[in-house]
Length: 205
Image (cartoon, rainbow, N blue to C red; front, side):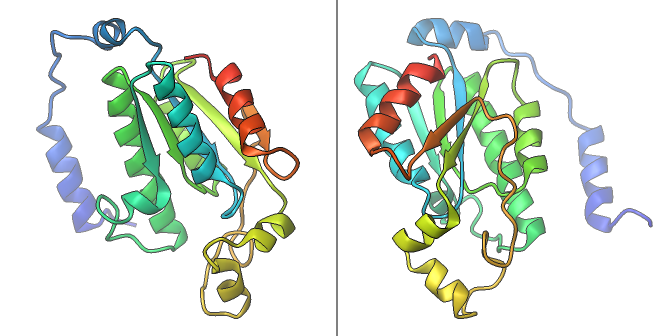
């Protein structure tokens, strides 16, 4: 199959682009902030507690004087990724864009916390590949589907079960749980305080 016109334009554009090496390095930016830049990537089903946990984690880190930024799945779809739908292809592109943004923020010396379902293992692996060894911390926010449906904070599972939402992760679209996440957080059996305490102790920033 031949390349699409879009791919041809993309290839032509890339051929004209050369990386510009700046004078200030990531190490310089990190030293100025007194921290270890990292991307802390929270993944899990809708309703598992990713956004709540990410928000609390950022608050805890900021309280320690860390320079942070939180990228939330719903929030980026209001701007950067508002042109994307929920097909498998669009979900992959959603994660690709966010991964690139997170990489830039880590290069700026920040501790970046992300909260995305990011259902496909290959997409999370591609995100990890953008970072240096030790910069990417995958956190599996582990809660059983039944528990997530019970919580259903946005009423999305109810709509998915009624057929009002198609390609919903966990119902008619798969979620591929991490096989080797650096951190596993059980939000079904632990309260938010315990989960945040575990994260702060393990992320190493």
